[in-house]
Length: 396
Image 1 (spheres, rainbow, N blue to C red):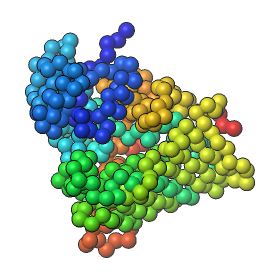
Image 2 (image 1 turned 135 degrees about the vertical axis):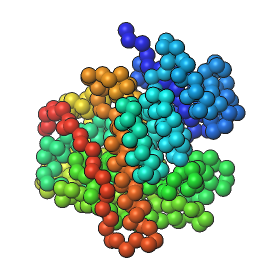
Image 3 (image 1 turned 60 degrees about the vertical axis):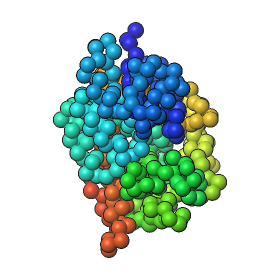
Image 4 (image 1 turned 90 degrees about the horizontal axis):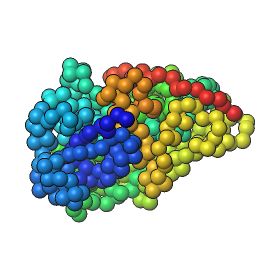
């Protein structure tokens, strides 16, 4: 039996909103284990987390720089295979760049960086070193999202007309950043979260999902970003009209001030032969309505799932945390990428191409809404990454 992949965790400590999810997803793969880490924003927090998790002291590092200084001196039997980065947005870029300096592959939370210049520079360095880079965009790894994409590509909806993605949340409806909430603190701070809050947090997942399911690339955006909570320097709500390269039109609405909303991500796609809808609140179902026919409720129990959707069911679903299994799928596929496996686990893990694509969307939105902009529509500046067609099953 092949040995487990050894990884170091940077961030994801006791104050992290997603660290526990990542730890569980890593364990779920059955082939990856985190063996060390720099877990906090300070040395104290890192060692405090290590003690709480009963990590041997010699495997806890005060900072990511301490960890990377140790990497070249690690014996082959203990050398790390990659690091996972679970930190505020502004640290994604310097940590990944430092990892590449010691020839270390990187798996990172989205967004890839806080701006396009960083994203392109990071890709140049990754390419120069020939290292793997994975990005957590887990909504594209849900089995019924993959099934929705396959239905579109099979022509079940006909010619696409409309693609709409909505992601309302309510947790920032008040100014939590001044009440000691650390997550709100860094996400609404331009120095740590970057030039956007809501669109960087939610909008890039919406754009990625829209392009993934539709199979079309967003070419232009017309956006309206708002800050509803007084005194907040970044957007907490946004609406974006979309134009796609193959003729479809669409919209994204993302918000963090909709009281009572939580797991409310939803994508709807309509063509001239039918429509479909997927909701995060019911992740194992897909509503498909053919023209002039009753709505069908497809599910993960359906017998005619395409092969890639069926493969995405290999990890157990957790009703309390629907993102757990998709994240485990990304880790599993990334491990194959690091190992240069000839048979990469499906669904594939997003890469720098996907990260740059998401940043291209965000960049276009920010340019369109800049106070000095006179453009009604702003073009995206980079091509979408090519994707292989899904492995097909049959359709009812």
